[in-house]
Image 1 (cartoon, helix red, strand yellow):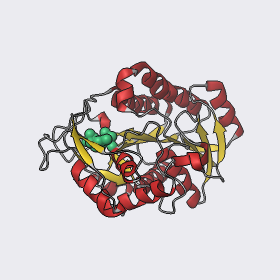
Image 2 (cartoon, helix red, strand yellow):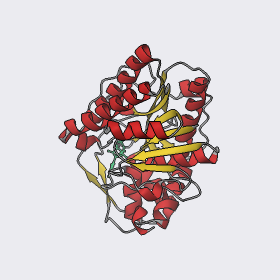
Image 3 (cartoon, rainbow, N blue to C red):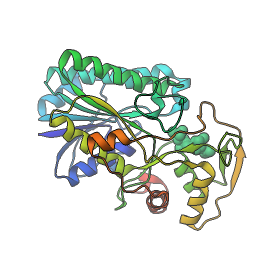
Image 4 (cartoon, rainbow, N blue to C red):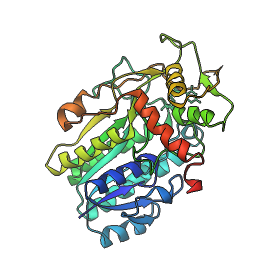
Length: 330
Ligand code: UDP
């Protein structure tokens, strides 16, 4: 039996495929390659290029392959874009998941691990954020992910499809052995942008706001190593296969670093200057986001081990230094 990974050519999905194959699992990957990279797909995975909204395409794969579980990363994930083009996000993210659940139901596939986000919470009431807190997304991206979670909840009630939703905080770093890493076009995330400055590809990093209510005035985020993050997916798959009930878990390292601290960490790791300039706030940025991941630790037995911010930055730097143009050069 195979695990079907949707979006297995993207940054996080490609790491899941590598780690599933490390565990000797058979993996089938679907990706429309709109934002993913064919080169990021593990050579031992069976790859199909196509869109999950295409029900005929999806049915064909479920008929051809023996799929017993699904890990779902196939979604658009840019907050800014989601505000400008909300219908694109509802179509790809929500409608895509609806089609997927329909085909899972038809083929009696009852287990799904879902890539969700801390953006489902919106501006937190307090930190650390627990799964019990109110979900009030402040952007379309978060709203679509919350809606996808709800779709799965109701499909469990009606069709017995059990799911684990993993709400990610700031995913960072790259596979230690260096084959794959982060390559977004356009790049909007803090760490890759800082490292592009270190590589001389940008003149400076813009710090989006220095007057937040935090010790150094810049936003604080909870950075989690992508390999630790994927370990939680592997545990969630086992949990569901052993009959675990549907649930939602936060994935973060439960520690916060400010934008300035991240720039300083990058200066130490790369030994480069990394000029920084203060810029205006980015719309919709909460000042502090830190996860409580107690629930994932207690229920799934998750134990993130790469929580040192230096190590996260080092692994990201290893990828960016060796692949300054991402997958284009390979
Ligand atoms: N950030 C920044 N400059 C940049 C990109 C990001 O100051 O060029 C800040 C951003 O405002 C946020 C933090 O870095 O406070 C992390 O942003 P990112 O986009 O990486 O992740 P997010 O927290 O939005 O999911």
